[in-house]
Image: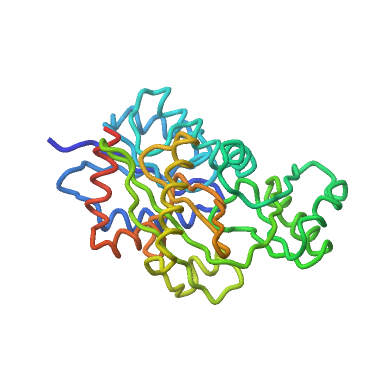
Amino acid sequence: MKTNLMILKGGTSLEREISLKSFENVIKNIDTQKYNILDIDVIDIDTLIKAIKDFNPHIVLNLMHGGIGEDGTIQALLSMLNIKYVGSKALSSGICMDKNLSKTILKANDIPIIDYVYIKKDENPYLYKNEIDELIYPLIVKPNKGGSSIGIKIAKNIDEVFEAINYIKNLDDDILIEKFIDGKEAICSIVQNKQGLNIISILDINTDSYIFDYSAKYNQDTNIYFSKLPKFLQTMIQEVAKKSFNILKCEGYANVDFIIKDDDIYVLEINTIPGFTDKSLLPKGITLCNNTLKDFLNDIIDFAK
């Protein structure tokens, strides 16, 4: 008997197009012999609830990036309707999407993070000028809840910081200003099964861009390969990634983003719904390990059932 699998895609966030591309790649690779599949472009909650009642899914695979798909809203709805779903629950999803909140929790648990300043969108950023200057330029300015590196800017002086802040305010988001570290960026992908947490891969990011921004992720042929970092650093990354995953109560799978400078590693953020596009890092890691996206999807769905 086939499993009724509902796949959520699209949505209304700034990451809508990435979600649709994730769905395109998933639907090409998923085991259609195992699932009855209904995909829903979630534009409004009422339509989604009606579709759930009509289809009666055994489980839901959420491919919505950002917005209500990733901030815990959809997760809370599915839990309220007693529908099983793949991935982290509502509280964990909301915490991980809020970079300031997740960094605060990680720092309290001795996870290394980069020094930063957090500014709410309705606050006067000039009140934080001294704190910003103390970080030392250049700085990274990013949306607090944004994903796919949309809206991320690098600022070489306070004027550029304020320009970036105004840009992010127009995205209706709070602002995170981080000290820029000129190091190696790496992604650690984690999957959870009944035996515990397993590291899929650690990938080094090699891009011609100054930072690994939206264009580098989706519009350029960024060179992604197994990490060439020293073994002791890779071991540190694996242990810190697992600890971060557990501290923030993640479930199913996630990407943990790192920056490495000399012998120091820092957690940038945890992505509870990584992209599944043909250029996304999680599928690349799966392929480099000589596994298939089809088997990975079966594994995360079976674990969540």
